[in-house]
Length: 249
Image (cartoon, rainbow, N blue to C red):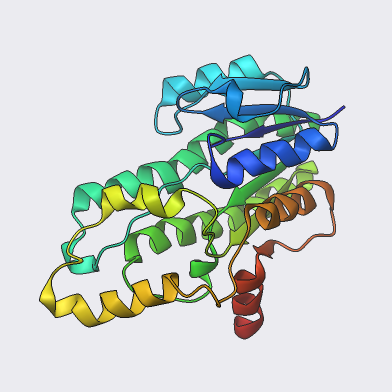
């Protein structure tokens, strides 16, 4: 029986991915900053561990407690919506600490066991906005694009050891709390100079006729990345993400 460790499982993509792997008879280590076992179905194949991806000691304790794993899914992330001009540097650093440096740090903690066993898969969940620019998310997009670049280079290093690295690129997902969480990192949206672009972006977000991404789409894409050795490096997840990927080729 194989084991997957997933970060950011308290809600959204991480929670749905944990459920997806549990339903397919995997052992699942679901991690979150504040552990809550009640969000997942009871199972003897489930362990819920505390893990703050911005805290080196928390990472060390979680990976030690997890023991051998077969797949690492780096899903934990935070969003932000602000004009670049008004995004505080402290906010930018916070976004990179979680989305970029947190992903790298957890990956580094797991790679020694993968390399020694000559087996394992790293799946990094980033975003389809790395495929096509849009306003108000410059810091968020940059943090996820950095993970794309990191993963693609790392994959070349790991290939001789039989270890795979893949990217899952979700689109906009109204069925998650991601947008709500991003409210804590919004700055300058009420400035008159950016009123036009803010109105345009929020109108797009509120357009219920536009294609979007379901959490289930992301779970399915992560499953493919984890279990299909022939999967491509970048796997778009969701109708909107797939459309964007087709546009850029």
